[in-house]
Image (cartoon, rainbow, N blue to C red; front, side, top):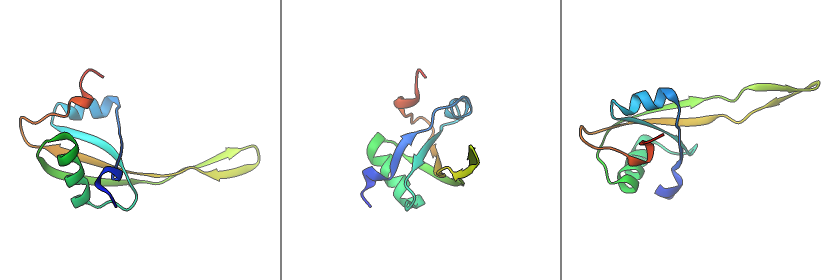
Length: 94
């Protein structure tokens, strides 16, 4: 897997903006990515030093459309902790 395919999109929410003050940033990542791949991808893409990577798997939910049940897609999320003094400017001003 190419390192540029690992990070899908940044996750921007109120909770994640509070975490940004603690040098923690959240990204949606590809299904087959592991912690090493995520660390390398963030370090190359944003030119920062990653201290820790925590990963979560959020399962999809069942939704009802009329009398049919459908399964929504789940996602994988990575919370990146950066070295003190490093920032990702993508999250500023949101």
